[in-house]
Length: 510
Image (tube, rainbow, N blue to C red; front, side):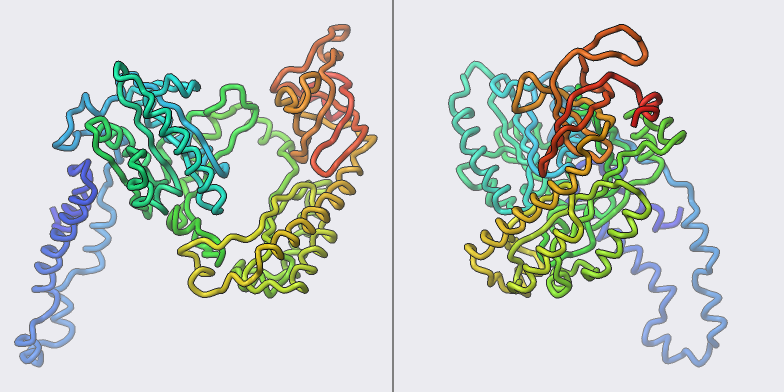
């Protein structure tokens, strides 16, 4: 076997111990390089005698193109997701959960929701049980966010509450272990481990496979951490476990990390470089989520007509400072193209108020973009500088806090005005609504989503079932109902329910 092929197979035999494997690989590669270089590259003494050999003869002694083809085409073994051998300091039994109960708490974006599902899938296979009762948990894991300072402060506050829970733990029970997962674990690793010694394990976004080992180490009373970022980890072979059994929708992660390096954003530093999942694994996950939905997508155009187009600013000058890669004009052109391609599409966006160097004129341009596009949904925030970002090193956070907040309030006001106008065009229309459950603000109302992903509120009343004439039913989560829209605000539509229907039959009414 060629020495290089031996090196490529080393990680499989090493299993646990990533630092050791890196060092061993480096040493092994140096040996391979030195053995090859003695034949591939002539020493200074040989160079002096180089005149004795022409260029063609020296080429003949080196590796050929076929040599590299042979190495590259060598059959690759399929990577196993199972732990083959435990690390030398742990037994296989210590890596098992032994039915200890895990409580998972998720903060931040939908990517963190997906991370929670991945982490739980890994722990479930290792013998852990899931609990929704914080008091009965043996392990509490917080899946964290670092996108804004407020998100991190929320976690610190939560940890202070959990410390009290840990202190009151009866001696008759196994010690409570607390873990921080995700972006905050990578960004503030040392601070989290050292502050009041309340966190037992840290696992970065690319270290969830290591959770059984980290928890096993923590059982011995030590703190355990793995926050190494990966260039190829996508968890493509880990099937996420849907964390909400009653959910009527799900997200499929198709990539991890980011290469855009927007000057205000910390994501590339907490989640690493961009890498995509293999298409086959994406399709497999979608199939398992819903074979029926796949079939319907294949047969007809019934995908939700909603697109998220994050603008961040309406000023081309600010967009350039943010390194967004487009101008205001290009963005508006894209909006027109989307609306021409998908009539009736619902648009949502992100905006940042008070980015570095933003002038009042820049702010006015953002206000005008909100009025021009007339978004149905929006996510608006005041800028907070994040360490490690390009803005932190190259730009100055020179917009006063009170100015940021004033501009944010103006953006919110304009967004609500324009969203209300956009949503009021639905008044008088009959819309198909996917029922999600009870309204959060009224026990007598139900809540669902229409084709544009807008929230629709309607009374929980009996209605006719179009497939069973004469039968009176009440809508349940997952049902499709027809709702006559009677009023609209910037965030919700309201109406009265007409009947329960199906995707196939709804086209006759809408």
